[in-house]
Amino acid sequence: MVLLVVFGLQQAITISIAADGELITEKSGVLNIGIEGVMLLSAFSAAAVNFEVERFVGPSSPYIGLMGGMLTGVAANFIFSTLSAKIHVDQVIAGIGINIFAVGMTYVMSQKYFEIDGTPVSNSLPALFNVGGLSSSLTLKISPLMLVMFVLPFLVYLFLGKTKFGLHIRAVGENPKAAEAAGIKVVRTRILATSLGGALLGMAGSYLTIDFFNQFTPDITAGIGFIALAAVIAGGWNPAYTFGMSLLFGTSVGLIYVVSATGPLFYLITMFPYLITVVVLGIASKRLRPPSALALPYRKE
Image 1 (spheres, rainbow, N blue to C red):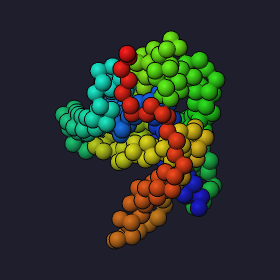
Image 2 (image 1 turned 90 degrees about the horizontal axis):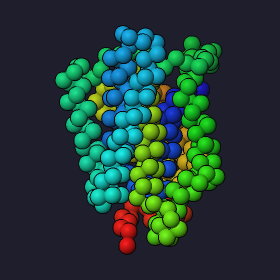
Image 3 (image 1 turned 60 degrees about the vertical axis):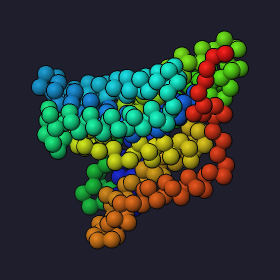
Image 4 (image 1 turned 90 degrees about the vertical axis):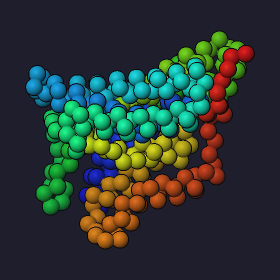
């Protein structure tokens, strides 16, 4: 049980932070199913920057890698939001395009500049502190991003519910025509909200390569982006419920690292996170109430 909690929390970091970023994006009426691709691009950027600057800045390189990954997330989401909100490219098509581009780009770049198996192992984010003696020499690393995971849902709640820009985001996601009539720039708000969400997607992707694994390998996200997307939906676009779903899904992913299995049972355990995601979405679908203008293009009249 202790092992499951440890690995569940570590896996939930990526899911929860990414879900918070996607939540902000979707509250503005933009559906980004390219979340997996954005995280993959950010994971590679963070690993590459971490490796390249390590010789110059030493132990500080993971922090620079984290900033590089977040900037990549902002850039990728900015391009996506410009295509969907300003040029009116179908949001689903644009998201699929980002996913395909990310898979190909990161594979080619890692093969060309590093190795076919990915980037070399580099420095990782130092732990705030370690908790030892949990079970059989197990030590839990308390990552700085684990604290971010716990604090971020509360900050997202305050941002969307108590700030002027957060209220603008919710307004354009519910009724963009009324928001435009009230003087809110719908397209600009959606682009800014999606870019802000991209920063969190970048942080989530970077965690995998500067903390959890310390290197990039092709397909390192392994569907985690889609699980984060499911957490937003199953959480009813509520920061607290989304966080709860992220913990649940993170625990299901952590189960893979806890249960020692071979043969058919191994494949069943590997499939478990995706099976539970489908089941939870099926149950939650009866009470879902997404933003009214989610995935609907807006053209100023």
